[in-house]
Image 1 (cartoon, rainbow, N blue to C red):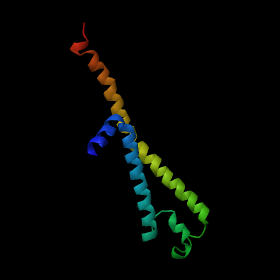
Image 2: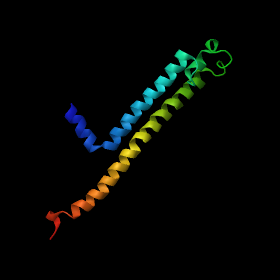
Image 3: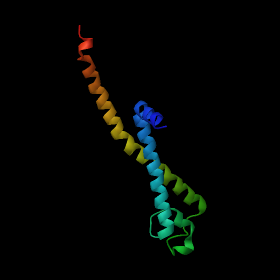
Image 4: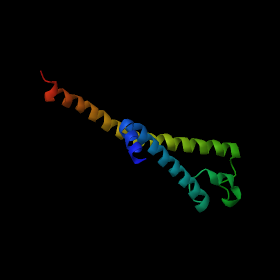
Length: 112
């Protein structure tokens, strides 16, 4: 299993980094929402569904508006963390491939 994971990383490093970023983004959004319900002091969206527990702050949105905000929050976290993880890996892979081409051209096997 570890060998297969290493093969996938070697074949598609940017996609693996983006997938890892999506997992971290989803975990971050879940922690924000659970913290918002548990502590009642977070900027999470789910406390808006329980207006009695939060005084005047809650109760201004209905379930569909809260669901839309929750969807936007999760999608934003997934995309944001995916890009955040994938861009440095893509830059590293691009630079590595750029210089690997020059190194291969200067190898003794390819000289006449």
